[in-house]
Length: 133
Image (tube, rainbow, N blue to C red; front, side, top):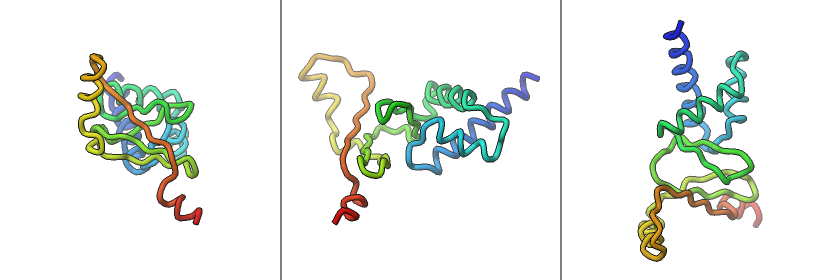
C-alpha cells in the first residue's frame, strides 16, 4: 500500500513538473491545479500545493514569492531573475549575467552574508510596448 502511494506521488510530481515545463508563465498552484484537474478529477488543490512545496524544498523547482499575493513556481532552477509585465502579467526569465557581481557587491558594501536572493523587475514587455504604438 505504501509503495502504491509513493508511486502515485511520483506520478503526480511528474505531471506537475510537466505543467511547469510547458507553461512559461511561472504558474501558481491554482493554475497548475486547474490544468491537472481536467485530466484527473480526483486531484485536490492541497495535493498540488503539498507536492509543489516538497519539490521546491528538494530543489527540483523554484518557488517564487512576491510576484502576486500567491506563490508561483518555475521549473528553471538555475540562477536567473524575473521580469513581470504590468500590462499582460507575463513573467519572463532574465539571465543572471546582466548583473554578474550583484551578490558579491552587496556583501562587500554591507558586510551581510547573502544565502539566496530574488530579483524581480516590473515594467512593460516588448510585445505590450509594440501594441501601445
